[in-house]
Length: 280
Image (tube, rainbow, N blue to C red):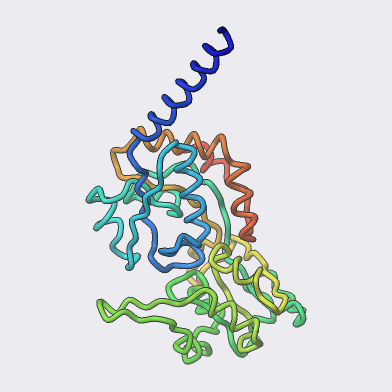
């Protein structure tokens, strides 16, 4: 009889736990409709996987709320309460509350292994002699290409790399896989990309490629620092302090598991500065 009571109690507790999870509202995560390798509508990006993991840790069902234009989704989705969480935002983004960083990475030089280019920093001779350097405009790569006097040399080539232009507001997109493929096929000697954006395609390339993390000690011609290493956090709507605390606990307690997901993607991971770790 005691055994039957114990079984009944265990079942009751299990049912109670399942009901508690069912009562939790879905975790609505703002995610890109087509911004690979981060996210897409099919859930194939590494941020899609991270969002699923976070939802599971919270005991909530994941609900993806997709956006198409990266310029307005915080204003049009997060601020209006259409989603609760944004994966992959800059740590300290003033538009949101941001968690402790869950990874830090940097921009990288991408080259073919067979070319044996000695690329260490922006003073490397290979950058002076390369005929084609693939990059996306508006990034630190553009700033430093201007600083070393190579931007004008690449202007016409850079226009060839545009992968998409929207009819509305002329939003221009550069596909990360295309920029990596420029190097893999030998059309460009070097590409300069954000490491997390490039890692999946470098790893999948049939042509062996090398990623070299660019040091974070670069300056413009006027002496102002140009950042190449950045910390990434989860963002929530301002005022959602309770959710922020829950997410911070996951970042603290599950750092090894999160790191495994990122390493499986091939993302180059860097140590966090002590100042970032002490915030929030």
